[in-house]
Length: 596
Image: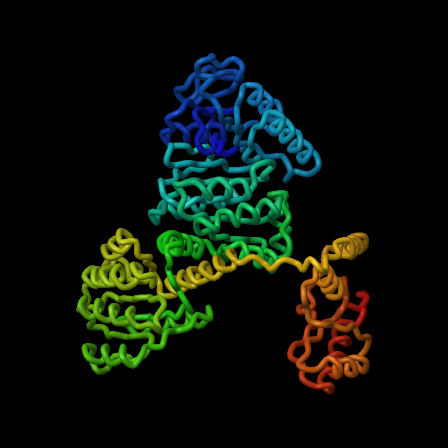
């Protein structure tokens, strides 16, 4: 197999920095300083016709004048010049044999028609020379293991096993600041920006086989090439955990994202379904992003592939304080996670050594005076129960508690009975100063640890989601019957008609017709004009029924009271259809309503 087309971007031999500078605050100043400070071992060559030396390095007016021995070492360009100059620079680099460029400059697709034309021009030039481009309008990229920091961020990333791929450069800088404070390192960081060439799909395809990367964090605002994105996503998710943080979940956010990335995002529920089918996990907050990634990298990657069996996901919560146990239980209920029910044998064994006033149920409260021996034995017995699939262990540092000794006891049982036997154990040692040493010990032992009960339960939920989505990823839909070929032309005509009317969303009838065209079974539906007709049709269909207003101009029917579920009688059908029609007509008098 030949080298990946992104290999020169992730492992360059030498870098030319166009727009390198010594002017305070300039992008070219920062990116050159970052490359030097990160300790990149290859050649670093500043390019700027106004200088002969920049930041202690000899500066050249253009690539063509770089001495031959040095020029042969250059294969990556970092461009921080005005947008209008970028096409000429890309051409220079192509003629000099460069294989990649990181374009930090703004003023392309996000800047209107003229910018889009400029972006098309640089892409055409790059393709002519078989160059790959990251950006434009991006923060850049990092590869900490080789000292590559081709960004204008003020933070250097530490070496680690998580890859971060983001459309937003601003988010990357914030994440880097957070990661430094929490000891989180990275195998690679890529800011895609306007993604004229290299998009999410390309980067995911590379990272899927990157041995330095054990988990992938993805920040998505909009998708340029949906098919490539999903292909890369599925390829990566088969091998390692992929965690997606997607903004623009609502229409207002989508419009805001489009103004600075030039990308558009479709319906959020469609995106969710695609992610689930691709085998990845989606989160909504940055803190969840890292919790999920760390947990899955520790337990979900190699652990899953080697047979971690979460079965029904029944969780056992063990604590030395009632309050934290209740907090964890509430969060589990929020996330629809089933609590484990201990067997009679396990209850008897716990009764034999725990104080008489322990909780006698899940959550298992082993009381505030619990020592390391009590923690270890309780964890051992609970993990041995066949009705327990996974476990969250909590500790509050009370006067008689030794957090480190308790941690050692839990680690021993988790490694022997839990994670070592495919029952994941997550922990939360609450507090700060008194539990710091224990947290370090958990990290060293590879046991996911969290600062709040809710965070631990949420991370466990991501693990369960990951396992479920991985199962979906491995399922192949059954093929269409050869006896009844798909009516592709009929489906195409339906979609063409909708587009000719300026619609991007199909009506219910059209959607069902598309499904039928591909021989996909769906529930029968009938369009009725009024409440009396609805009552007659309802009797022929049977109950319960769902009612939905048919008005192509209304995309979100639920928001206007246009959906009713579980309708059980003819009288209820007539009443609810009439009420629904009246309500929608009053709220939207100018909208054409086909019926229900």
